[in-house]
Length: 379
Image (cartoon, rainbow, N blue to C red; front, side, top):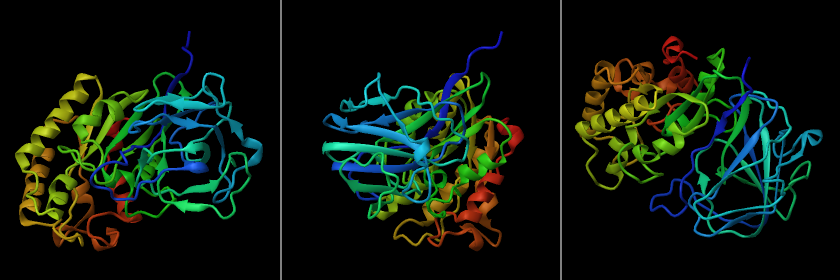
């Protein structure tokens, strides 16, 4: 007898605190406003559950109404698909400081790659919002309760995502779910805004079964809290506890080597990075999951002051040799080799460079996705 479908992750959004010392995008709050946001599930199902978060909030977060629909064009929805999202049968919900909520199942069939619009009405004055700061999607903000409005003319456009941590769908037992756990090279900085052209999107386009959800956070580091909690601190919540997870793809290191230089500090040393990667691999393996690690991409051409240093680049080369030969992970994907300039391997190939010397454009993101051996991924 076959088992009933189980709820698994169809979409994830890595979030950070608005109160961090370093901010790569301005945090904000809301008062008597509707926020409409685009969510693109990597997998589909006959129903969907919405996950909302007040993870870094210091006061309760009140949501006066939440609705979900298929997205139309821009800020518009497809009206006949508009559904109320309820929590324990109620249309309103309060999320305590540090808390998360999961909605009741919503009877709205969703398909992989088909954009959804999630509308949140925030009736009171919020503090600064828990948010995803570089999601490569636009949020639309208007005054008052307009969660059911077909379109939002005159909406303020904000390049961030607020209070959303994910979507779940029911899937058959055995559906493989990979978590792309990493930094901006997963989150998609440098790729076309809103076009689904991130490396994780390109990887999903290659898969015949199962899918990959994205937990990349731009600026995130392996060893130190700065932009978001560091990888070892958020591994359990953002990867190992994701419903249905079978594989964890790891992409870290570039920010440990580059970001300290912006503050006049020395980059992380290779031994510390190797120890951190080894601990990540151990914890993934101890949960019975498959780990795949990316080599650290080139950044010699970074336009940001202090990022590219001889010490950081030397550490990158050493860590990459270890990733390729150390045998610690179940598999690797050699992103560095796939996107490097053959004549200058510490630099991104010119036709893959987003323009800042540190991030990939759409073509580079596809090359990153193509570096993953699907046989090794086994999806």
